[in-house]
Each structure stands twice: as structure tokens, then as C-alpha cells.
Image (cartoon, rainbow, N blue to C red):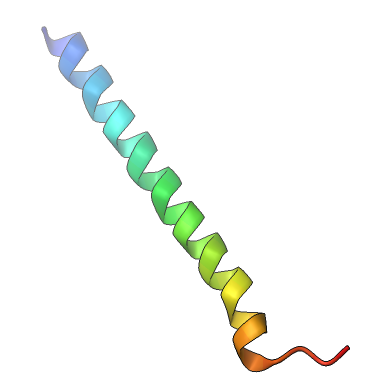
Length: 39
């Protein structure tokens, strides 16, 4: 019972950290475009 709860909690932490990382990466990709990169 406790092991199942821990696995669910671990999965939730993994998903949330992944979404935060994806969001940060998306923001970092958008920032140079917004500032206008000179080629």
C-alpha cells in the first residue's frame, strides 16, 4: 500500500519536473526571438 503511494508520488514529481523543464526551455527559445537576433 505504501509502496504504491510512493510510486504514484514519484511519478507525479517526475511529470511536474519535466513540465517545468519543458516550460523553461520553451521560454529560453522564445526570448531570443522576442529580442530580435541580428543575422
